Amino acid sequence: MNQTTVAPRLPSLNPIRKAMAHLSVYAGLSLVPLLFVGMYLGLRTFWFDYLFFAHLAILGAALAATVLFFWRIVHRAELSILVTLGGFLIFLFIIALESSHPITSRDALIHHLAVPKWWLEAGKIVPIPWHEWSFYPMLLQLGFTGLMKFGLVQWTPLYHFCFLLLMCGVVASFVLYKTQSYDSACLGFLICLSIPVCVKLASTPLVDLGLALYMGQALCHLVYWTEGKRKNSHLLLAGAAMGLALSCKYNALLACLVAFVAMLVYARRSGVTFGALFSLSFICISTAVLVYFPWLLRNATWTNNPFYPLLNNLFAVSKSASGPGGLSPLAQRLMLYQENWWEVLSIPLQMLFLGQDGNPRRFDGVLSPILLFALVPLYRLRKEPWVLFFWIFCALYFAFALLLSSARVRYLAPLFAPAIALSAVGIWHAGKLKAGKFAREWNLGALSFALLWSGWHAGDMLATSGAVPYLQGTESAQQYLRARIAEYPAIEYVNRNVPEGSTVYLLNTGNRFYYFDKRVFSSGHYSSGQLLRWIKEADNADFLTTELRNRGIDYLMTNTALTQTALSDFLDEPERAVWNDFQTRHLELKYVSGAFSIWQIRSGAGQPK
Image 1 (cartoon, rainbow, N blue to C red):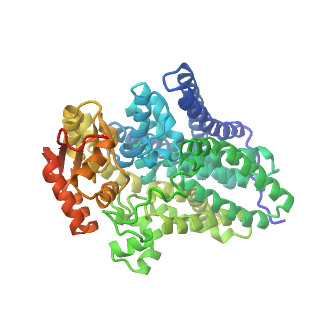
Image 2 (tube, rainbow, N blue to C red; image 1 turned 90 degrees about the vertical axis):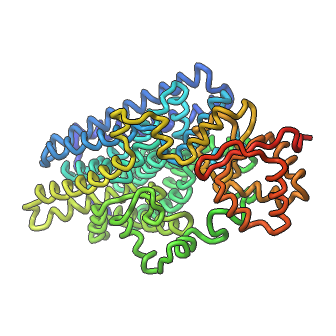
């Protein structure tokens, strides 16, 4: 049997490592009951508050164990404490600074904060039929809901950061297990904490770090099981972690499938019998499904499709107003950016060196060249089959993700933990050259490079976000949002002037729903799709007006240029005539701010039937 040598027992650290592993999973599991309480008892009940605070207590215990583990490895490592503790504190400070300004993240405002806000307004977890993102698995949003209930929305980015800190502990624990080196464990922890994309995500209320934590933890426990005494406890933790990853984001469906394919190769290379492999599959899969089941049940109850909106074509728009319809994400990239196949094949390297926040062409995120050291452990494939396991997982997931979604760094969250662990182990192996004479200097140099690279990008991030001037009081929260969200003045007009009970249809406005205090409606990412279908079905402007009125829509808020482009591209001449007649006779312009206009459907026009 080809099996790697297991690290010797570390009596003083093993209890902490075990506590980290269990508590991080328990923290995720403690969120699950909030779904049922919120759906059936409501969000204003004692039970929701009690379970939420119990979750915070478990999460706090997991964080305490992680910080204690880091403290212990720092003091046992040969690296400079000034660099290790200094780097840790500096990046904690940067994340705290970047979390302090008003939230402007598009996805947070469209989905991750908007849906909990609507739940709280309704008093319970309810379906939002027009908002397909609200049917996604939303484990971390249950935590956001609890914080927002107590007026702590500004703490939601730091809540997301907690899952990064837990992932740092998972990575460092695994690296210590594989290398028996406190230096390399420190490397793994601090590289994970400081990678620019992780710093960016940790200061934003999203869910990607929860997905990254639990997929990384699942992979590590599969290695522990394969190389250790094959205790079922590792399989239960791996299965629970996979179920929690599935509960965070649909990307985990692909990640779990790829993980099992990679695990089959790894298990056979490690001499796992078919009986043990069957036991692994049964325990792991059944545990993952059990943890994930509440979200399947919720969607099946609400829509008759447990994976809604996946596997559901009822809401598909064949043509979009903002992108080349019918093309795969990879084909869209080739067409939009005029890239050739060599440039596509070099995307992994480009991500390491050329990433840029906010620029989709540059992958909307920043990694680090330090991850190139993930290549080094490949020379030990025969002696350490776990390297093949991690590499198969990373390569397959990256390839499928590139084909199925946009090439964005954030979408690669399931790869963060295994890639960083491979890199830290690779740095450690490189330091063993020449009998390890310069291992300490080498490890310190690699860590310093990683921290300086990430610190440089963190400085750019702070400068771009304007967090420091905001904290200095040079502008109010409202001024900050007006300067960074183009439609925010129009949102303020809606909140001040639209009557209670009226609904505003948002057309190509960016869909930052969270900041609207009045009822809004949209039809998806390219939000003119539903209106285009109504126009195509309408015989005249009166019919279109009636369709809108029947749905309670009293106002339209439009990005004028994008809406006109959509109408021109996807309507024929008679259909455009219907729209022009509707706009002339039934709409009254109420407000204009830059590219955004607000229209009211005239009183008495198209009264609901």
